[in-house]
Length: 341
Ligand code: ADP
Ligand code: MG
Image 1 (cartoon, protein in one colour):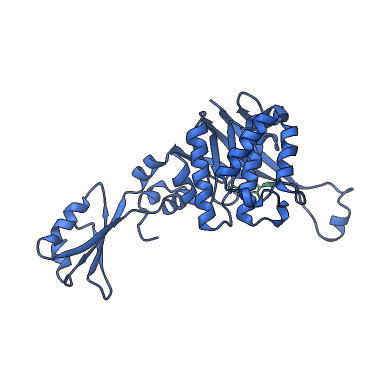
Image 2 (cartoon, rainbow, N blue to C red):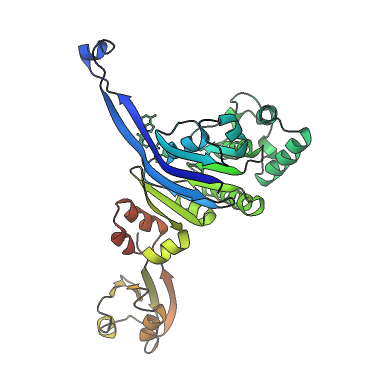
């Protein structure tokens, strides 16, 4: 187990700011605090080489968990072990095993050519010149960085900066890569490039990837496993495909015919739970069905008998829809995720 998280808790204590005189006198009057349980009793293990999505709504506790894994924050209670090491107790040793990318921040020096940032990191991680060269060449090629390698970070576009940050996180060949919202604000072309790169890194180098993102297309592309948290607590941990199988039961089939369908109600009378609509000004019918109760081919056959079918397509609920319904803690709602959101 490369990542072990046991009974992990993080409570933030924040001083309440009082307005007016009481506020001004806060050093001599008793200070009041509010506490925030950002992470509550979380448990999970990750094996080397896994790619795991760590997902939850805003404020769920994702970044706080990652900060405890990197050693930036101490757990209030419970244990994090990364490659057998407790990060907050042995930060330097832990740093050798991990790379971190925070989408909202950069670890690049702002005013110097990014190539120089890598040289500084080479010295910090005590890499040999040969190790460093090989790894940098590989990253520059895979991340397509030639054209901006000698520019200062402040002159890079967001997409270039993100690639440069990824290279900085990976220059010492860490066994684990943490990514906190890595594709935030990026255009679709760069997103795809970064996803491709992460997939390759995970498959070829067996780098363990833990990814938090709001962009659920990221996770479908990169991750096989999904861990969902909400309000600090873990609500789901499992295989992404199995989750979709279990919770995304609804399908929609849209059938286009050469002539208008006028007798849909009669034709579908044996399927009382099915809902359908005729799409306005078209010869298309859209039928929502539960894939465990009805097969798409059954529905198609109903119409091919007497109509000429031009085209058909089958939609499944988006992963977003399934997960959004899980956030509210209502798994039965998640099962009813519809196809049209
Ligand atoms: P996420 O990354 O899932 O959006 P965070 O881990 O950043 O969520 O935050 C979880 C909760 O902890 C939020 O309610 C947030 O306001 C609170 N929080 C995060 N950092 C601090 C801090 N340093 N002090 C007080 N509260 C914090
Ligand atoms: Mg966050």
